[in-house]
Length: 331
Image (cartoon, helix red, strand yellow):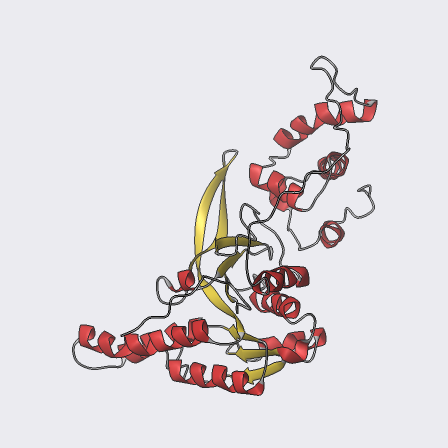
């Protein structure tokens, strides 16, 4: 047997992305935003395999994307047929919303296993190859594929400042163990529609922390796919640019009276209103500066509110409107 030996080259790669999250985390909407970036805004090149009872069509206002509404039974073979249908139709991006039904939906792998007679181990030997063929179809498709997966809901008890708080969080994707590692990129979405990258072979989202998925996120991934040869980049150093002189250690910029007040009062407000470290991270994610945070907490203090009363929305403007602070925060 002869083997072909060739130089490694990433050229016109087709991305495989997994979006996991609990119900209400924005999986369908986020996958459409990613797909719009991957198609440069051409929604007619996007096909959705919808197992969520028509939920994809709720976002028809975004563009004229294509839909296959997959009904029961949710066998691996029916998923494969739907993927093949979109490939033949000529779409660039296939969204599978969601792959969880293939595993635990009606007619899915777990459902079939529960209804099989005989030895359980022997039955798995029959079912595993069928599931593997479904995953292989995704990985070998000539289309970009975005798969969504539900996460199992779990309630955890956190103790903050002596008070017990119960929070809902996603803990594990609902599909066969290890499937998430088959994808090029794996995102986890929280209830505030923010994403965190769990796995990233592209290194585009390395050390990025939490962020919102947008059309531009899809464009960024598309650019990576189209790079082809990846030669080491030559570092270009700017010329004739004077480096800013560092102030001497004993020279510190003088704070204004207002900045001095905020510096002294903010820690007191954090303690009084029971502001957790998680909430402080949320302020930073919303890009609120010190003046805005101080104004918000002062308004909360006047109204007798604590951190437990806050309900976060996706955008800061929407959140402030919901909380009734829109006229009190300086922008």
